[in-house]
Length: 155
Image (cartoon, rainbow, N blue to C red; front, side, top):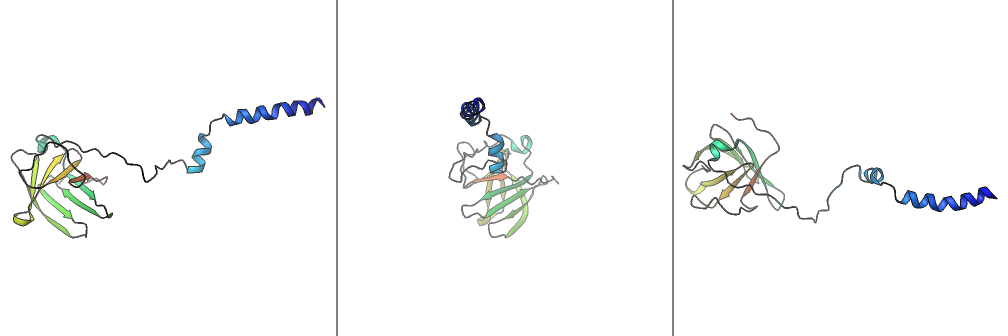
């Protein structure tokens, strides 16, 4: 009889103690160890400032991607020898050379109607409306191409 009384008294205590335990291992097993944020959470994007004299102060050579709202991607690869390779959202590629503006913070790709001006930041480039667009102030996602995770060796 004494054993049944002990058992009756210790069972609720054991349940209470186990409810206060660490659930980390159970959570990791249930999620595979990775915690995935719900898709509806807005994650702020940082837009680095355009660098002063980016030509000498930023490691700009590399590939920059811009993801469009429909999921397609544009990319621009800037090489240290002032050549570039651009791929639009339809996969059409263009190559050529780019020229630095005198402020060494902007580059010009193309000529005439195909002229595109980009401002250089650390880890990003921004497409500007034209060479008179200020490089200070807030940049937007529509302007931004961010450095790709794929490493590109400078030429």
